[in-house]
Structures are given as C-alpha cells and as structure tokens.
Length: 355
Ligand SMILES: [Zn+2]
Ligand SMILES: [Zn+2]
Image 1 (cartoon, rainbow, N blue to C red):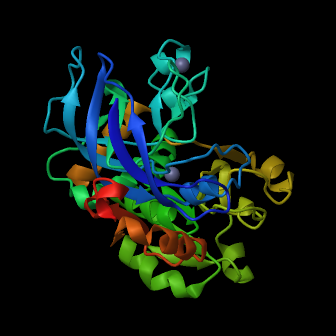
Image 2: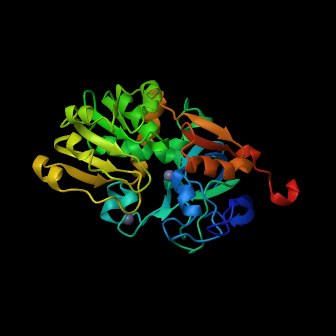
Image 3: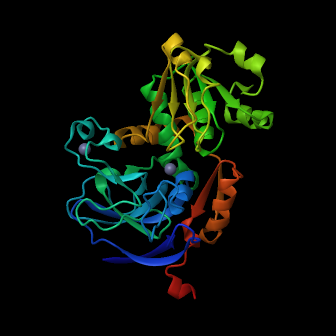
C-alpha cells in the first residue's frame, strides 16, 4: 500500500480537514500519480455535505485532477513515469457492456466507478478523489494531458469541460449553430468558451444584466436577459440547443419556448428535482428536455486535444488546500470566476510532518 494524505470530510457537517490514508498496491494495469492540481467542482460541495443522500465518510472529494505518473504496474502500456495525466469523474467501469464497448463508460450498464464517494469494483474499498497527494487509477481511465495545455489551468476540463463538451458534440454543434447557455458558473463559462470555439453563435441567458460584460469576454455573442419578457418573446424559436448548467432546483418553463422545432434543452447542472415543466411548449414545438452526464474516456481525450488545439482553458482562481473550506463557502455564494483550482503543492507530505 502507498501511504498518502489529503483533505477529507468526516461527516456532512464537518469542515474538510487533513486526513492520512492509503492508496492500493499497484495492480498490473494501474498507474500511480502525484496530484499536481485539483479543480473544485460544485458537486464536491454537494457530496461533502450529503446533499444527494448517498455520501460515505470519510470522503476525500475531487474529480478534476491533473498530475504526473510516478509509478506504473507491470502490464501498463499507455503511460510512462513522468507523463502528465489527468483523471475526471470516473476511475473504472465494467468495460464489457454495450455502452462501455461504444466508449460510453459514463453510461456503463453496471454503473461506472466514481472517482470518490464510491467503491472499487474489485476490493470494494472506498474510492477517494483528488484533494490528495497521490492517486492510483487503471491506465484506461487516465487521460493524456496534451503538450501545450497549461497544467495549472487544465484540471476543470475534466468535469466542467467534458460535461459541457459532450452535449455540444452529441447535438452536433458546429459553425452557425445557435446555442444558449443558462447559468454562468464553472460549467456555464466552459459551455460558452467551447461552443464559441466550435464556431457556434452563443447566447448567455441570464437573470442578471451584470453578467453581460463577462459573457462577451468569454466569447458569447450576446446576453439575453430572462427577466425581459419582450426580449424573451423575440428570441422564441431561436435556439438549436440550450445547455442548462444551473446546479439547483429551478424553473425551466421560461426557456422552453426559446427552442426551435425539434431542438433540445439539455440539463447538466441540477441533480434532483426541477420545478414542474409544462408540456405545452414540448408538444407544440416537438421540443425535448434531456440530461447528459460527463462523457466517455475517448471523448474526454478528444476534448482535451480540442482545448489544446483551440487554446480553450477555464478561468481559474488558484488556492491553497488550507483555503478549501472558504472556497466551498464562496462557491455556495457563486463567488468565483469561474473555477477554484487547488495547487496541491500546498498540501504538506503528511499532517504529522506539518505539525
Ligand atoms: Zn464535477
Ligand atoms: Zn459497462
């Protein structure tokens, strides 16, 4: 076993605090990595606080992970010591079902193994995430960080990036596509950047005019104020795809008429109930509501390569691991532009040595 250390929640109402634990002995197809950077996803906060009701403790969150390979199992083919690798929201799947064979491991029939707050498929030990010094992962679930992608900014691509890239690809967004983005947080700002880089015409739909300057800077063509009923009526039928990134219960009814015939509003933020949607705009325009979870491993690699080539990176605020609890509080107030990234060099080798 490899001794390591991280920050963990011990219960739903405890602050994150230093936590020593062990990573598994390398299996033949495992790589061990030193974690260099880890993004802070809104779902880290939800899971640490048991907002979804399935949290297990102690919990080391973090599923936007960038690091360096420090050891490889004896059958590893894809990576060598020193390679820069990344890990996202899942670390395993059955790899045999129809979905896995199609490269859609996120939709594995037997359920993928989440990077944290889950159980290893073989040992049934709890999985722990990237708020830690080291991570052990089977090589097929590590991604290659392309040369030229800034390591200190790349981490949020592993959740916020792929979660918005995948629906853009699933619904064939390209030059001229009319894309709406609701919510301008970690996911929303990536949706804007990625859709713009794909050549789409991008509109941020927001309750707040204050977001306009940021929306335009991020690459949006305009901001549509959702409280402006006249502007909303004028924008009806004007979108091929709307990506809704709002991470809490909300009302999608005002947005449905914005979709053109046969177009889709895809939910990527909220996990749980929504305010009751009316079927009227769905029936009248043959419009659709869909959901989409992260993306497959091959698609995640494609997204990283796309971002390296197109120069797409999240806007990040770097923090030390000892600032994580304040970061959670600020995240709750949506007070971040647009993603916190933890510089894992700020994590002492072990709490004992830091004392
Ligand atoms: Zn996430
Ligand atoms: Zn499967």
